[in-house]
Image: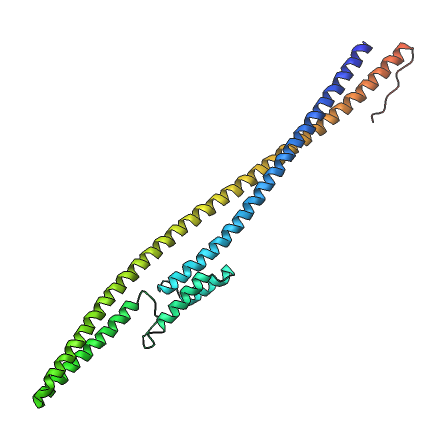
Length: 264
């Protein structure tokens, strides 16, 4: 009987040792995995920071093109430039050329931009047409007084008409050019906005996944620790029971009453 009890005790100790080894190995594996997840999460955060910086730079360039097209005011462009942090040479060159082009129309009313510039050119053409009409009126008045001036006046009108036709043709060409540029800028802005939305969604999903995996690992680790503590408590209780039982049997064997054992 004593041999069987000792054998049972040995089995319990072996099982406890095996469980301890399993717990240690499992804890180590989950610890290594958690380190990997933390590195991935840090990489994702860094990637998001880089994407945010790129977003600010693209927003700065977009606002610059919108400003020259009259789709955004100067304050929005300045705010985007401040958020970007550094001034882009291409954007600086664009704004410099834009300011130089707009300075060519000092008498224009309202905020000038490449989109409403054709309207200003049309106003200039209408003014020129008015001048031509006035010249023709003066020509008719002078014709009644001096017939010798008729030939010179007709040549002047013809030259003015030629200038008008040339200006009209140039205006149509510039208008087509500006419309093509505006369409291209709008398509580029829409493409960039779509790409930014997809990247932002992807980074958010990755961060959410890493966070959930971390919480699951912590829950599993807590469960394993509680299981080990429970096994330790059971092992100590069984050890006290075995010591009390052996002491009781030994007392009966020598003819002495068994003493009550104090639990540790």
